[in-house]
Length: 74
Image 1 (cartoon, helix red, strand yellow):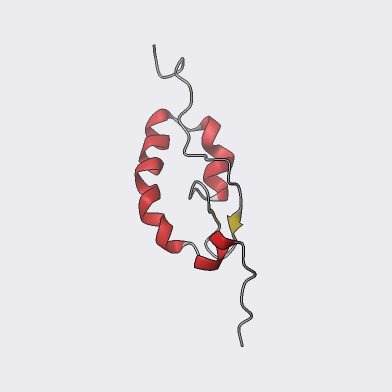
Image 2 (cartoon, helix red, strand yellow):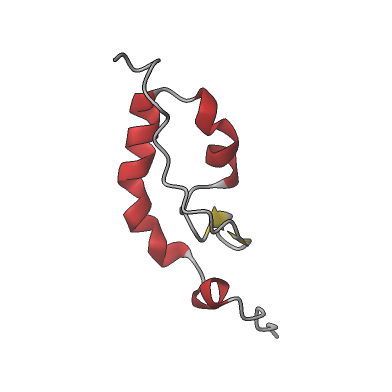
């Protein structure tokens, strides 16, 4: 099987909600741009991004994952 025959790898866990401060999906940790371009990326590009995802967890606001409203500032 070649890269073009293989199913597209994806980190999607079907928890699609965006943390607007980081602009990352709280489910898969990809940016909106990465999600939009995912199908047209090469397998190597997708693997590179997937390797970066665990380090992105700290960029998500803790209240974004629980669904709590964002606290007002000021």
